[in-house]
Amino acid sequence: MGKLVLHLVDLPMDVIYEILGHLAVEDIIRSRQVCRRLCQATCQRNVWISVYERSSLLLPEGPLPSQCSVELEASLVRAAKLHINWTSPRPLVFTQRRFPRVLPTYDFDANVISGRYLQLAERDGISWYDLDATDMSKPILTYPCPTVMPLSGNLNYQVNANGEGPDVVWVSFVSHAPSKIFILKANFGNMGPKVDLHAELSAQDVTSIEMGHDWLLPIREFASPDSFMDLFHIPSHSTLYLPMHEKVQNLSDLHNLNYAITPRFLFLMFSMRSETLVDMYPLPKFADTTTPPPTLSGRLIRSHSGIYPHAISTIRVVETSLDQRQPKWHTLPQDTHTSFLALVYVSRSPRTWTSKIGLHLFDVTVDSNGTLTFTTQSETVLNVGIATTSLALSARAGICLAVTHSSPGPLILAHRIQRHQDSKCSMSVKTLKPPDGLQSRDMLAFDGFRGRLCLINGWTNIDVLDYA
Image 1 (tube, rainbow, N blue to C red):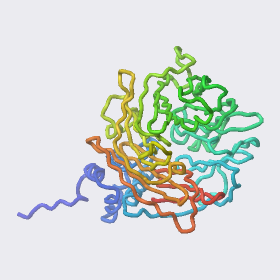
Image 2 (cartoon, helix red, strand yellow):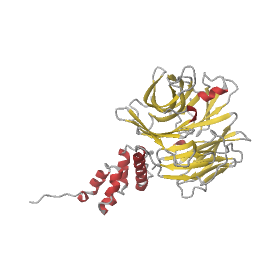
Image 3 (tube, rainbow, N blue to C red):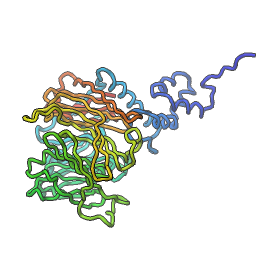
Image 4 (cartoon, rainbow, N blue to C red):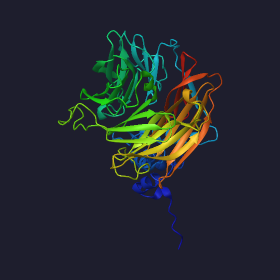
């Protein structure tokens, strides 16, 4: 009696789907060359949903109900290509493009939304350009305003406005005559592109704007250190107040402040010579995001404080215990844990301000006794000048890709940070060599989900580098 030979393609389709869902992205793509039946199986949405949910790659929030199999596959293929490139000895630029307009020196502000939409503020208004389009020269959306102040720090944005998805964005900018902060609601999804005015605030004495999780914090010059800071909840048009940090006595002290907004807390941080004082303010909950809580008072009350043993220059939120797919980052109960990535001073001399710069990943734990506990999980020394170093990152589910940009030079470093199942962290660093002829003055944006780095080339050009 002969042996029964069972081939993969002879299995029931649901079994084939299950097998494909456990394969790596590149193996699924290769399997399409086997036969037509297997090729058709690899195009099924449920296969790519399974791969997406099991993947350890850096991926945007998903899989979403609105995403078809082609979109899920494209996200996974891009993430796999970026992972291979980012972990290679020398990551390579796949494509380099230049924004086709020469911009006015010192007379524009810009950032990039979700690695795709270039947001440009000039004297006549705000315009948006699709960096994925074949022709980047034509704006897909404009908001005319002849009194825009295109100064660095005045243009900002926040995705997932009011929880309406990644294509809906709050945009803020400052105008003069009248001096106002304009808050726009832009939609780049199937209902767009379109933009509408949502709110106007006073821009008196504003030097910069912070945004996050539907909150807007104007940073203002003050007449007295006893002045209050105002915090605006965008969907409900509500304004709360909090005291200026107690160490801020002069206008120059504002340069020592850093801010971080999470879904539940506002962190106010004051950097001293060798440490950073951190205050935490709980943010009120809004049942339907547009109606203030009935017990909402006009002032925020500090609930916790602590000291991080290094002076922080720049800080970014990595993830909080409220983020989805959180177990790799957090093992503590919800609402207690926040991970930060920060540029800090290290090895600072007690007699001088000279220092090296370190990149620190640290966790902040909220204790029941009113204190904040800091745990440095991973760190490295960059050995570059702190005053000219910027930081950008993308993170989700225990994976963080970050870029630091230091000039003159420039020195551009690629960082990959991973939180493992045992909660230990690993951090690797590689040098990103700019293409020949690119004189990068500053980093405009980095998006790790797309593998896209946008740089200010010289004073008037924007270059787009894709690593996936």
